[in-house]
Length: 114
Length: 110
Image (cartoon, rainbow over all chains, first blue to last red; front, side, top):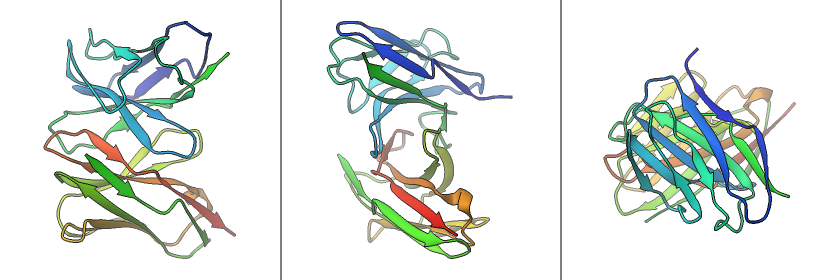
């Protein structure tokens, strides 16, 4: 079955540590996105990528980094510069960034501070 | 920039009809989407309106008035499984980047 897989489901970060969240899709989608969701809030865009080896900052990119070396993969690194990383992180993909196609979401990674 | 407003919470009984409103302020507008998210789960796409009027998909309908910067999601024949958060989201340009509202938590009671 085609879909988006995020791992791990739960992740704990120590002070000063970088952690990487995995996102893999087998939908053959060109565009991929990372969102952050805080309790009781909407989704805020961190980064997006339209094509391999290209990505753009979203509204809240500070303290995060991404890479897009393969079409299927769009990992997100939460760096030590992100002082309030505790949140629910959602990865999504769509057929194209210039398309009105819906975004398909993974099941998310819940990140907490130790 | 963009901002979207929706009620934080709505309660309705099983079998009833409920309307969730969304008003938006955007520098550009290409369409309004609706997503459903159960607690702790992945958002799933419900509907998209690019033009004024009503779009119907089964028990769910979505309406858009671009002149009023307003849309709504209508859920009919409510079921317990419809208890979830519902988010409206706008496209500001021809790209597919979305700006989400804060979400409306719908509680369906027996």
